[in-house]
Length: 378
Image (tube, rainbow, N blue to C red; front, top):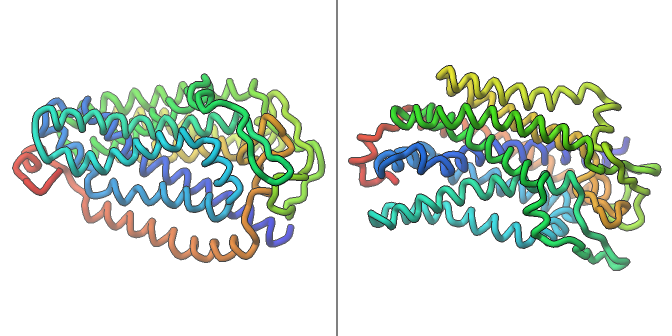
C-alpha cells in the first residue's frame, strides 16, 4: 500500500477519534443543558448546575471546531457536499449552539421570567444539537440523495425534511441524546450535591438503559437497510474525485459486510452496548466517576460501530451509488494529509493534556450555598 493510501486511512481514523471526542466532551455539556430545568427546581440550583460545567463548556467546543476543521482539510469534497446538502440542518445546529454562549452570559443579567426563558434556551441548545448529531449518522447510514454532473457540481435530490424526520435518523438522534444525558448526569453527580445529585442520578441511569435499548434496536434495523458495497476493483490511491470511480452496489444488509469479513470488529458494538449498561449500573450504584468513563467508552463503541460498518464510505449516494464519497475519493492531496498528520501529532496531545489539567485543577464539589452568594458565578 502506498503512502497516500496510508495517509487516507490515518485521517479516517483520526476523524473517528475527533467525532468520539466531540460526543464525549460536548455531549456531557449538552446533557447538563438538557437536564437543567429538571435537576434544578429553583434558581440557585440551576445556577449550581451551570457552574458545574461553567469552567469547561467553552473549552469543550474545541472538539466541534476540530471535527469540522478535520473534515474541511482532510476530506474537502465531503465537507463541501455535506455542508451544502444539509444546509438547513446545519443552520438549525448553529443557531441552537449560538444560543448556548448567549444564554450563559445573559441569564444572570436579570431575574424572574428572563431567567426562565434562558433556561428553556439551555434545554433547546442542549437537546437539539445532540439529536442532529445522531441523526446525521442515521442519514449517512441510509445514504443521501445527491449526485454530481459532469462539471463536478453536486445536485440535491431529497428534501431536508426527510433528513430530519425519517424514522431511522430519529432513532439515532434519540440514541445520541440519551448518551449525552447519561454523560451530563454523571458529571452533575461528580461535582454536585443533593438534591441535584439525586435528581441527576435518576435521569442518568435510566438514560443509559434507554441508550442500550435504542442501540440494539438500531443494530437490528441496520441489517435490513440497503447499504453500499464496491462492485468493482478499488484503487486506494485513486484521484480525489467522485466522477469515474468504481461501480458501487446497494444491497440489503451490506453494512454487515465488514463484520463478516473481520469478525473481530464485533468488539465495537459489544463494547458500546456493554458500556451503556455498565454506565447505568455504576451510576445507579453511586459510582458516577466510573459511570462517566463507561459512558465515554459507550460513545467509542457507538461511533466506532458506525464507522467500521460504513468503511470506506463516508457519504453514500442513493441517486448514483458510483458517485458515493469514500475515504479513497474524497480526501485531500498526500502533501496536505502529511502536513496535517504532523500538526495532529503536536496539537491533539496538547489539547488532551490541557483539558486533563483543567479538570484536575477545577475539580471538587460545587455547592448551592456558595454559588448563591457569589456574584461572579453564572
